[in-house]
Length: 235
Image 1 (tube, rainbow, N blue to C red):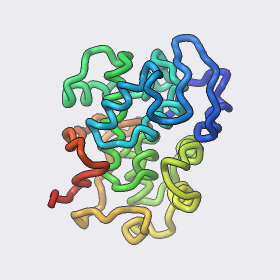
Image 2 (cartoon, one colour):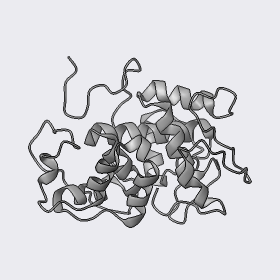
Image 3 (cartoon, helix red, strand yellow):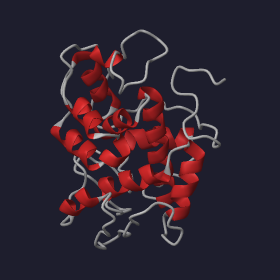
């Protein structure tokens, strides 16, 4: 997420979707180039998180690769923790809501927390590009982009480019990376799903450039990819 942990193989992250294996580093696991690799030590946890929160496994692997390069003990300069680089305040909220353990470095619980947060961001904004931008920059920062046209941080734009195969087309990435000329133009853009209400999102009370501590949605049913987007009723 913001200011991710840097190690000597940072440039290799650009090949996240090029099926390139990353070098093994201390306290890290080489992540598989393709989803569903059951022999990988993290595979069962990723599969469980994908089923629980209705997020594709490929998205979880991709975010994990960019965030920590498979290092379960990773700590960023900003204090983000573990494989999915969860900020401490966000972890505290997620662990209580989703019944996770006390150790944020625990592989299973960190993957569960990160996936829950991805799901919450997708429910809030309605599309993968916005989900990833908010995961990296924080929803408060992303709301400022939507409501006031404040450009996303350079780091977040680079993050989206690396995750283009998850986020969508190059056009979608460019749209998310550039401030709209009309602060409310996002409401009319095809990239963004319509919200059930017609009020602009309120900015977060405290912005730290990362995930904030607001409550996240409860576990979705596991039998569909994306169910009951924010503000919508299930049929």
